[in-house]
Image: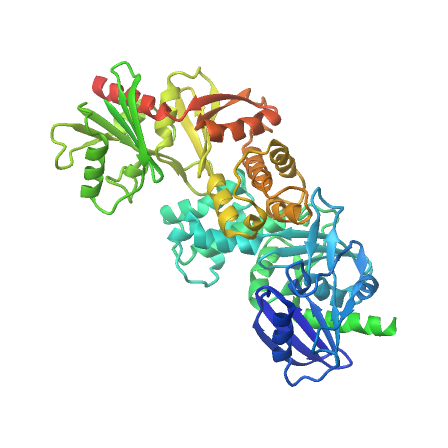
Length: 298
Length: 298
């Protein structure tokens, strides 16, 4: 089968063996289109040479502004519900294939405003039958970080923190970026100072501004300031979850994402006394293979 | 005397009577220049027709990237310290005038990173000899809101919350703005919902993202979403101060700023059970007149 993780930034394609191993993988720029033909053309080009009959898609390609809008499934959601919610569709030119789209997941219970994910549920699906019974916290850092609670094989809550996007807009468009260099090296000293700053009184709107005054007063160099800001943001993101206050405190957080992004989160979590278990972002392909297998059995 | 409140956005000029009344006022776009001649030309043009000998300047015009860099005075700072810190300078072409620049104020004690203000200290100076003995909280909302504590006539702490700037960059540059209309009417229902949202669990990075999901799930119209986001931000700003937890709770907050901005803050504070006393943004002119009088006495 072919697993397609189609987001607004990245498009990742995987050819999977019958036993769920990645045989080949391709990656290119993602993005959404105005019309169905453009999606079909793009997919046809990217899977060129791969003859597998089943193609499973997940991510923003299934959103309102995507190829084929898929509804959100309400929590709690396990592998069986995700598999049952998959929809088959046959765009022109794909009559000899079977295309499947995976639904998103919605949490309407945890807050006064619903929270959603689309794409991340497929990565989590790969873990649902592997994690032991009981409750687990999964964090998928990114532009819009997802914090997901899983209990006994089902997703029970979803919370989105717009950490990555906020970091980017503050750096590019706010006064905070003016004193920062374009250097992107991780500066552990500045990151840790930001992490500590996030625990001080005064509140986050003041903590953010300190990324300017810390530069004005030469507490950090232009190259270190981005790490300081990153430490403040990730510190707030972690503290906002109930990880540090929950009793008993969870032994670990499952982190899913790219090595580079996970490095910052793992550093922050371990500094705050929480263990981490890292998982590759390619988990999405494994999840799609597992869900397809359930559809075929069903 | 002529009082000049020169910021990066606005340049406000006032002609004051000997008894500290505003006789005339002018307002135009502010901004900083590369060289001293440009500042001198600009000032000469804007005070055209005003012959007063003393000209007092405050605001970003005294910053490192301004006309004449002024040091920051460390808290605690009262009217006598501000007056003593004023520096006289005589740019070419102003030999028949006396130009004075007011120093900024720095709080190095309250947090691990210093916090500063430049311009707002002049507005507060107008209140320092008027407020009764004891402790007072003054909030000057804006791009960078200042929260200032005054005790017995002296400024003892300064905290900056980048609320206004964050609202602007999120609205213009982030995904949150995509569902918002350009309508800028204050929607009290949406604002109050944002205010309540800011008190929920989950943390601010998630609260911010709810300005998107609230739009996706049609909880608020495109015209109401900006007020919802504003309620979230101002709610967090107020909660981050220790106003709601301090014992005894302060009876009121002094708000200084434009009518329009103060309306949102007054609405939020009274909703949260805190009284407000409003002061005009033109307080700066009164502060400059008072400080000049102290210099002349000294």
